[in-house]
Image 1 (cartoon, one colour):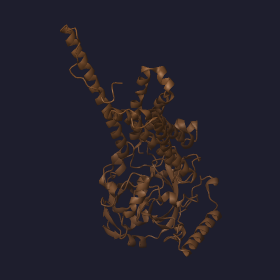
Image 2 (cartoon, rainbow over the protein chains, first blue to last red; image 1 turned 60 degrees about the vertical axis):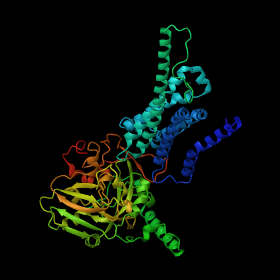
Image 3 (cartoon, rainbow over the protein chains, first blue to last red; image 1 turned 45 degrees about the vertical axis):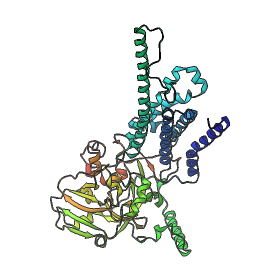
Image 4 (cartoon, each protein chain N blue to C red; image 1 turned 30 degrees about the vertical axis):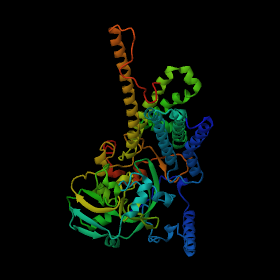
Amino acid sequence: MLFGKKHWAAIKIMIFLLSLMPFLLMVNDAINDRLGANPIETLHFGFGDWTLRFLCISLALTPIKMVTGRVWPMRFRRMMGLFTFFYASLHFLVYILLDLSLSWEVFKDEVPKSPYILMGLLTYLLLIPLAVTSTKNMQKRLGRNWLKLHRLVYLAGLTALLHYFWLVKADYTEPLIYAGVIGILLTIRTAVYCWKKRFINNREIHKKRVEKLNISSPGKPRFHFDFPGGEK
Amino acid sequence: MLIKTKANILSSEITDRAVFESRREFIKAATALSAGLMLPSLGQAATGKYADVPVGPYSAELPVTDREDVANYTNYYEFSSNKKDSTVLAGALKTKPWSVEVAGETEKLGVYNLEDILKDNPLQERIYRFRCVEAWSMVVPWIGFPLGDMLKRFKPTSKAKFIEFTTIYNPEIMVGQRSAGLDWPYVEGLRIDEAMHPLTMMVTGMYGDELPNQNGAPLRLIVPWKYGFKSIKAIVKIRFVEAMPETAWHKSAPNEYGFYANVNPDVSHPRWSQSRERMLGSSIFTKKRKTEKFNGYGAEVAELYSGMDLKRYF
């Protein structure tokens, strides 16, 4: 590996600060009254956009690992996931605290009338257990279930897209771009998953044939090569 | 005719006339000063082309939204669905010379120069509320004239039951017209009694000056009791018709955008509530304003719709 432990620590700090930049810039704009005619909307949409961008980055890491065979993307999985949750929380809080002025009355009026807001709330609810179980400790405690639980992120990706599509009046360009990116990432994963499964099946079939022939030595399977990124 | 301003305005919402006028004086002075110093003039409002246009009837004494907010937050899908991009891109539209075609059920068919139209129709300033279907609102001092006065001069025939307006179609400049989304050119319409109503305005300026391109220069409609999308921009054609015109947003989503599109807090958009609105320019800690039926112009226009089910004819 090119980098040592210290290098990775430094890179992580840099990525962390970089990921925090959109938030800091937005705060700076807010302080200097540069949020435009509809400041709440600027904050709300801005944080929503960044949630989707970080979600795309988070979902891209595993496919990058699969395609390149490098493991470094896994180092950033937790951080990117948590930044997705961070921006989603800001998006949510701007809506509840500023747009609704924390008014239960307005909430009761607006939310049931708005399928896209409901979809947004559902997306946020899906992200909460992922953020809560993101620690190493929880990962260990949950074992195999952790992976199963964290597959919720795919569902969150779909509901987030639906949330976006549903609020658009006529121009679907932006949600289509996000849908394209998330679509490609999910396709890569599914393709690699199917490929892996077929390989394992082939190996099983080969084993059975060998057993049928009653050959004591199992021999080598017909296909044998390492997957990029290993089998984990 | 007895002309009354709206009675249901909170006294706290009304800017004291003296304050309002002194603010204008201040802007004038500041502008003069900056002009004198050869600095870019920021407060064009008071020294603009229409600075001396008299205040017309129905003008509400409300605190107006900052001009910068009105001019930099525009829905103009012909250029972009992004409110900032459309502001910038609209600058490329050439608005002089400009002519308007008058067609359909009228005795005075023809193409009219905007200059001639403006000569025939003395300008006045009216401060109106403006409510977008996206649940934001503003208060704007428009410069224009009653649409009805102009329409009467064109002598519509008895067959003219509706007016259809069309925006300029120029995909070379109006890049948004190159893509789908809406069926271009943009078309809007009014029932003839709505068009003739004294509140309905043809607008060519705002804040004492000409309309910026992004706000619909050089000629747009303003119907203050209807959602903003009815107030079509950059009009090149006015047609008197017998049948209700098919309008742009209605065509794109008939279950969401009706022909009438009267502001109504009790009839929500299928995807969002219309009971409140965000006032442009308000701070992030300001609560949303409760939307008024007919945008607060009910006393003047409710009778146009008497006996109509407003939930059905939304």
